[in-house]
Image (cartoon, rainbow, N blue to C red):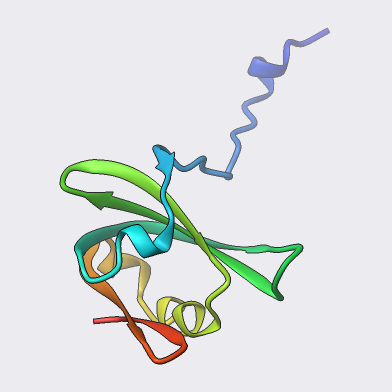
Length: 96
């Protein structure tokens, strides 16, 4: 009988690294977005999970912002990581 490690199966799911930080703590501050994933959410239709760096420290941001989801899916994977600032325009968040 084989051990699991001998099967050569690798997980494609990547865990994000760092403490969770609320989006209002990073508004109007330059961050580096290194990765993202879109996941189901019990509160909104979808949830955006962002892996970011702020001042050299890694954090994870969770948001249900439909507008940020619409914007980030347009970024090509080869364009990661990228610098941005998240701002609040009226009732929605935007990358600048």
